[in-house]
Each structure stands twice: as C-alpha cells, then as structure tokens.
Length: 502
Ligand SMILES: Cc1cc2nc3c(=O)[nH]c(=O)nc-3n(C[C@H](O)[C@H](O)[C@H](O)COP(=O)(O)OP(=O)(O)OC[C@H]3O[C@@H](n4cnc5c(N)ncnc54)[C@H](O)[C@@H]3O)c2cc1C
Image (cartoon, rainbow, N blue to C red; front, side, top):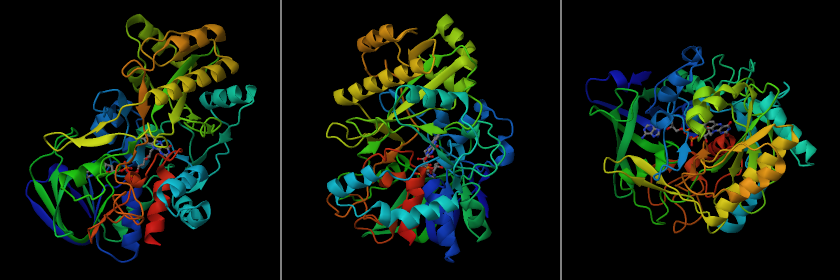
C-alpha cells in the first residue's frame, strides 16, 4: 500500500511490527528482508515514488529537484562542499552511478586495529555474495566510454595500476544517464529490487512524509512522528502521521539518521552522534581533447584506480558522468570563459579523486548540527594535510590527462586557468592554494555520524546497529561506518544489512 503524504489532508495513525525511516540502500533492503520473514513493515520516505516511466525524458532539470536531497543543492555549513544525496524511493540507489565495490580489506583491517570491529573479508563473504545477488552485480563487458578510456590510457602510459568496475545493471542500454534515474529499468536500484517485493508482502510505503522525531521513554521508542511533504521543496507541512511499532529502524542515510536521532533527543553515551561524518571529499580535474569525448554518453563509471588510495590522505580515481547542468554548476568560471568551456562539453574529459577521510587524527570528518527548525546542516572543514592530499590528487589527475593526450588541463579551482603543457601545469598547481571556496570540493558519498562499535563509550550503536541503551531502536544505513569506506559505499551498506539479519 502506498500512503502519499503530498495529498494527505488529515492526521493519520498506523501500527506495525517494524517502522523503517528511509527507503535507500539500507532501508529498502531491510524492509524486504523483514517482510519476507512475515513482519508487518512500514517505510517512511520523504521523497516521492518515481518509477522508470518517470525517467524517460532524461532531464536533469526535472531529476535534480525531484530526486535529490535539497533539490541537489545541499552544501556544508560554510557552503564549501556540494553534497549529492538521493531523496526519492530507492534513495541514493535510484540516482547513483551503479559502481559496485566491496569494503576494501585495508579498511576492514583499520577498523579491527582502531575500533576492535570483528569484520574480515572472510566473515563478510556470504553477506557480500547475498548483496551482490540482490542487486545483480556483474562485470561490465562493454568497452569503456571515452571519459573512462582517458583515465585508463593515462594511467597505463604512466605505468600506474587501474581496474574495471563491476555494475549493478541488467540489460543496460549504455545510455549514461543513471544520475537522472534509469530510463530503461536496467539499473538494479532498490526501487527495482527490494521495494516491489516489500509491497507485494503487504508492506506500507509512506512516501512524501518526513520522519521528524521519535517519542521515547526509559530506553523504549513508543512512536514516530512524521509530517507531510506537500511540494517538492524542502519544507514539510503540519499534517501528522503517527506510527507505533515494536521496533524502529533509522535508514535515513548519513546526515539524515543523525539528524532524526538528534531531533528526538536520543541519549548517546559516546557523544559521537552526528560526529565523524565522512564525505570522500572529491576534487576534479577537467581536460580538453581534440577528439570527441562526449562525457555524458555511456556507462558513467567503468574504470578506477586505487594506485594512490593507501598513501597518506590517499584517493581513489574515477570519472563522473558530465551533463550540462552538472557541469555548469561545477565549473568555477564565469562569463565568456564559462560559455567557452560549456561549448567544449563534447571534447571535455573529467577525472575525480575521492579522498579517503577518517583515517588520520586531522581527518575526523564533519559534525551534523540542527538549525532552529530542526533541519540538518553538516559542519565539515579540511585540515592542512587533507589540503596537501587534494593538491597531490589534482597534480596526479593532470599528469594522467596530459599523458592520455589532453590539449589543455583545468583543475577545478576558482583561480585555475587552462594550461597546455606539463611544465606550466606543475608550476600552476604549486601556486594554487587549496583554500575553502577557491577549491571545488564535492561529495556523493556521505558516511558515518552514528558509528557502530563494540563499546557504548566509543560508538553510537552495537555491531548490529542497535542504539546502546534502547531496546527497540536501530540504525541501518551508511551512517554506521566509523570511517569512510575508501570505495563507493552502496555495496558495503547492503552487505551489513544482510549481516545484521543473518
Ligand atoms: C549521484 C550519486 C551517485 C552515486 N554513485 C554511487 C555508485 O556508483 N556506487 C556506490 O556504491 N555509491 C554511489 N553513491 C552513493 C550511494 O548511493 C549511497 O551511499 C547509498 O545509497 C546510501 O545509502 P543509505 O541507505 O545510507 O541512504 P540513502 O540511499 O541516501 O537513503 C536515505 C533515504 O532516506 C530518506 N530520508 C532522509 N531523511 C528522512 C526523513 N527525515 N524522513 C523520511 N525519509 C528520509 C531520503 O530521502 C533517502 O531516500 C552515489 C550517490 C549519488 C547521490
């Protein structure tokens, strides 16, 4: 049953076994697994229920306001970092780029050493296998598009390692518009996999309702209060949905889950709730080629490199899909220069470097705070060492772009100019300060803020995602991670949800 909050006109009340907030990687998969066990489950999702047929027009201007958190304009508190998160049924999985990685062994080893977490490649094997089956992860046999080929060619010429990305698609048409919702239904997002099964099992999908707060007493949550979302904007209405349940699961995503728990004044003995929120802060390098690149066409991410990932403040190299709106809002130029670059879209190649944050004393992530209205805002700043990591990443990307035949390279930075040879490029990179606002930093991977652990003084939940001190409240989403993953996080989230229910 679908309960659409956008057309609600009176307060409503429900009673179920499990109430799950958020229908993304964590929430939808949890809803399916619990429904299959025979429980009555309600999922509360503040986004709308858009389906494959709604994505046919491949339009960025429709997708961003409808499918993304804060209409795709979420930023950190100081406006330095742009954050992309899904806000629709399926959450991030409906709009993501279908890149599938397990949690790297080095990350698990770090978690064992630093946090005594008991996870290993072996102990997670069955859970990753189940998650990969759930979303049909497989090798991508089609040759990479030019945007990805440049990454491979440049790294190859420099003798650096790279690999091919597995994807969660079935019968993909190789269109390249995953970020505006898959127009063919090939992407095995939670909207395609878990949600239909959950609905078939009599699940209640309450869309366009914002979970506002839990009411609780003596370590037991008694009900959830949600409000209707009448329009596509960010404000909620005043019509209430009350849900009583035996157990509540917050899967509102990193930022969303800590915000809900903070609004609810959930007692957190560790003092870590909302803290250590990670972003894989990402810097970008553009390059102009004589040949057509057409970076908007073809599977968005098929090549990656971990060559620099495990160095201090290391980074993973990938490429993004480049569509006009995304490009226009990411470039830091203006006037004629901006126009000229936009006209070169066909010949533009873009690399991204995702920094592995959370592994150093001066890389402790950001803090989720609440505005007076209870709305979340992430306070995230970067340290001098992280800034050096950004500089190293920009240098690395420019080098490989020149090695692959770029005519000009443009680090995405407000003071950067296009340079046409490596010597000028090196001195230009040396001059650029990796300062907030000047340097473009983006994120599509928000993690942490309600970390799991083995001890209530140093974690928000136990390793099963249960809030310490609460008998019927859990977290199941990317906010559980105690550092960033060092790889695209979707599969790690699904793997842990499967582990928790096993
Ligand atoms: C453009 C883009 C590309 C990406 N590409 C990849 C990729 O290729 N591979 C990969 O592994 N990862 C990728 N990611 C990241 C990945 O999709 C996310 O890390 C993952 O989906 C997070 O899962 P989650 O369960 O933590 O939260 P989400 O999937 O974000 O789901 C949370 C849901 O909760 C809802 N919600 C939040 N607050 C409330 C509230 N108060 N009440 C009700 N509902 C609420 C949100 O609307 C959302 O639908 C990408 C993300 C984006 C945005």
